[in-house]
Length: 268
Image 1 (cartoon, rainbow, N blue to C red):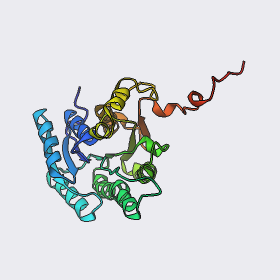
Image 2: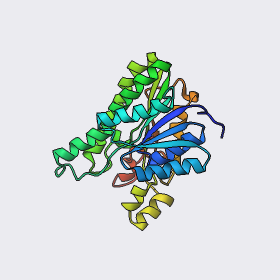
Image 3: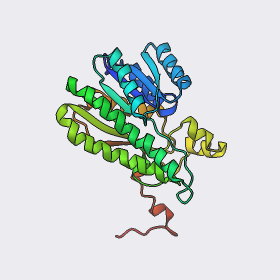
């Protein structure tokens, strides 16, 4: 691996575990100095330690991105260490909610506050800093849930669609200022959360014979991180406004033919 991000600075939210942790590690491996952000310091400290053990540079700030004052703290910390902020990865999100008929307005608002408003607040604050350098790369972590429902998670699904839409609008306004904005949409990923919410039989199926997915397996967090590192780098200099799907081919199949009551007879 060559250091595509040598000398770059990066902020990664939700970096204490799972996909966010993998993204922070990958950006550091490629030469970036990384500020990891999350609501709890303990897992962030572990991410920083992992990066340091691998020879990278990182430090942590505990913050709630849905809070304007906390966002100000994050940006102030970054500006105190770096002359410019080159990369922002908006990964922080919440996922816990009951079915549509049971979800409370408070839970719905909280999901939007973190997943959408938090992404907006930090993106706006960082973009204002990127303008002075005339360049920057912002990557939102969206989801295949922005493309279709996969369970009783109406608030989460709505927030991810909003994040994709936000990225498109940001693209139109920020591209003339030298700032690129993209999304990475993970499919089903092999994270701690997936393992905690799945039985051993289900995990074995998803890891080794996930028939609904063309690649027949879960996506690994490191594979999401690879996509993010590419979009953050100058190798993606002409790419902005896209939602890069990393799902093992899951959304390429509408899953209609497989569910018919009998085999389809093609026209001849």
